[in-house]
Length: 409
Image (cartoon, rainbow, N blue to C red; front, side, top):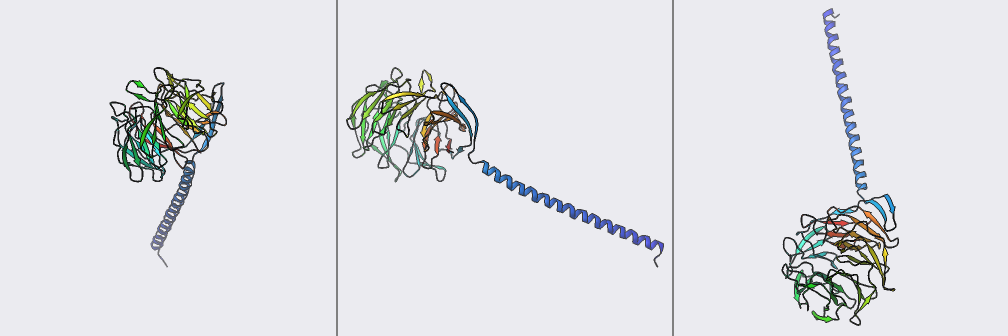
């Protein structure tokens, strides 16, 4: 038999042991709950990540539609701008040319001084790399991809004067070759590849002289020959190769802003006057549409313009289409694979990051998400994958080295 004291001691020890097991069970249960909670949180985090990744894909939400007598606008919320690698140099008034190897060649331009540097963008790796420099620094020049896959650079300004030098870039060797000079020094001219493989250069400015001269580059001889002059001297105009092989030259300015338009016939080497634009303009854009018409947008005439008009090669007449939502000049226009036209940036009283799409089938403009950077005097290049590479230019304070991709839905 246990004594009363011994029994009390045993009971006390038993109670302590029971309390210890109860505490231990509570700890085990607590740890189990914590592990379960962590498991649930981890699962929810993974699900949330999946949702976020899915939401990054371009989305479209119609916010509103506004119809007036002059503008039909659909405002869309779209996630379709992607920041890409930066260029090695900030530049504006440069050129950008899509090569047959799918890379984009960017040449020259203006930074703190005129540039002769050139660089390549590789869409497959999203990187910029420098290539060999041009023999001459230049901006406000032209770049034309030839049938032999080389790129012809003409004219521009070297920081002191307009120049007549020309050079060829060979993508296979990444080297430059100086070829014969043009007959005229020129800046803010146009250069168009003809169906016969030659390049037609028109207009521009040499010193204080506005030019009406035109000349042809022959890749077989690397020489220039003068062709008939345009009816009007003009600078900051556009030149568009039509489906009939003729070149449509629109607007520009000399001592006055022009609405005159003329056609160059490569077979005859002659110029003819065609229907005048409704609005005189320069520093505008001109885009050949899938149906063969030409869309002209924006530009400058004392003030920046938002008007747009269409040229019909069959009737040789112009008709108004709906106005853009923003006035703009020094913007870009890119014909997309879906037949729509993408307008980016430019300037009016401020530098713009706004973007809009023109639908030729409806003759309407759609506002889409702004670019990341406001910019003008930039370039936009349609890539083989259907994306548009927008690069360079300047904003209100600096020359830009940024680039971004527009991805159509």
